[in-house]
Image 1 (cartoon, rainbow, N blue to C red):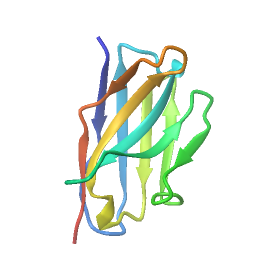
Image 2 (image 1 turned 45 degrees about the vertical axis):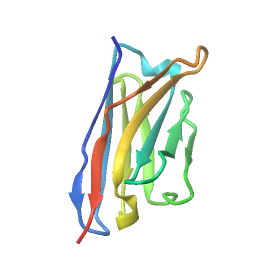
Image 3 (image 1 turned 60 degrees about the vertical axis):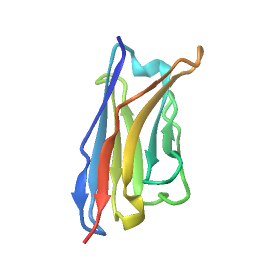
Image 4 (image 1 turned 180 degrees about the vertical axis):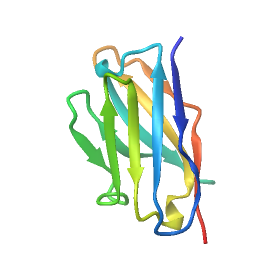
Length: 117
């Protein structure tokens, strides 16, 4: 059974930092494109950042220069370092895994990130 478990969310003030982690079990993430998505209240889920199996990364324009995505294929985890957080970053953040060959897709349950003074 596949599980993606996010952790590291919380409440921080604007300008603060958080580090989200996604721990995978039941799959080996080395065969997956990994990504972080987020969904704010009343809005559609949006792609935040992606890291390919080979390590190439891409980011939404709104987070470029502030967020860093990384992966540890040995530890089977993915991280999202978030700096200079803004109120508009408030959302539930989801971990996503898509198999590079089969397209099999898995989601985590989400972790809440709230930015407020």
